[in-house]
Image (cartoon, rainbow, N blue to C red; front, top):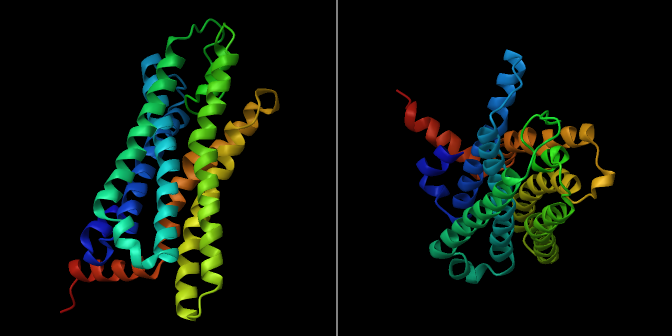
Length: 268
């Protein structure tokens, strides 16, 4: 997706610029957990250095937070394009687009840094066996020998800021978008708007639903087995499916695929 958007000039628009960043985040996101998990599975060695665990936690929280914020930026892009089309190039200028992307990366990195530094300075005096397939910070808190109730509330507060508030913003923007689309007279305009919005909503639901359910629940309602099952969705399936969803359900991307394929395989 990143290469396709870079190579095809017709995809040099704010929407696809944001999509290229989403693809980059998904690539880094899945690379944070899956290679180590696969190595542990095939080698039978299930150990990780303490510092490596911290690095993995930092990149996981950073990518997860940045992607959640970027999905909200993408929803705003669709809101402006459909509800205020005449002002689209003003509200979604290149400068604004870069600000959204830098904001997502910066806030996500700060969130990851705060959580990682706090988690690493805690004393771990119980079992060193993490009941997860990656260094999940809430799971690591079970190994701490001091009371962590303050930090557990910090995790919920962070989840509200990074997950719940963006999700509510996306819901509100798409509520307005659906209202505008419903009153459109052009059938072609309705079809195109629904196609674009349904693609993004599919990605949003796949991402926010398991993530929010996992991190917004109180500690007494969580179980390690259920946490691992839900984590498979947002660590493996969602990053893997996002490029497929955006390519198979988007005629512009499919057309770009044919054009780029023709560039490298010209007919004689």
